[in-house]
Length: 261
Image 1 (cartoon, rainbow, N blue to C red):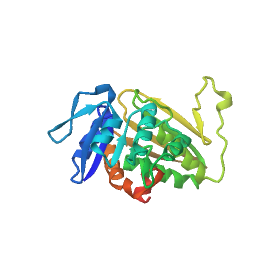
Image 2 (tube, helix red, strand yellow):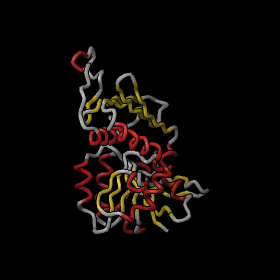
Image 3 (cartoon, rainbow, N blue to C red):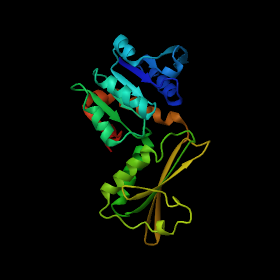
Image 4 (spheres, rainbow, N blue to C red):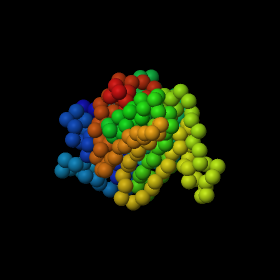
């Protein structure tokens, strides 16, 4: 059995993770950590409950988990990862907003043969969307990203958009001009620029996680879009990461490293 500790367990994503892990025959949730709801119980999706505790260090000491799954916020995740990875606990992280430099620094404190696995998006379709965009950028370098999320999301642009822009920048041989910024009537109308790619962030109630990458060429456009209409869409990827994180060491970024795409 893979022993899993879930941080942010009482949150929207945390509850989904608890239920998804509990449903696996080769995994068990040994601890649920959430300082905001310490002492409360949450359903495990299989008819049982698990109590949320406050102290991550104590939970690691008592339960000796193999893997920590973190969907919290940037500040909390930084502390959680450092505490877990220094104790030899593999980390599967979906919390966005951390820079590459911050992730690298966190991975540096890991015990040998311990992995910090970070994915900006755990939906399998989103991983494919990013890969398709990377391939398209080789032939159609003019690209813009529109990402749409719920209005409670704490970062903009999203981690998925940042990762997609990075992949596009690596793949294309030129950075074409993105005209229009000099004639903006309202500042920011042309979006932010990430690795040379304009990115537009939409935040509205009713949304979950959506992204489209629009490519333009002579007489044609190509749009690649992915929609997560429910948070359960992320769970197959989370389970896949928990099951495979022990194969890796150090910092690993992106679910594509497991999928082989």
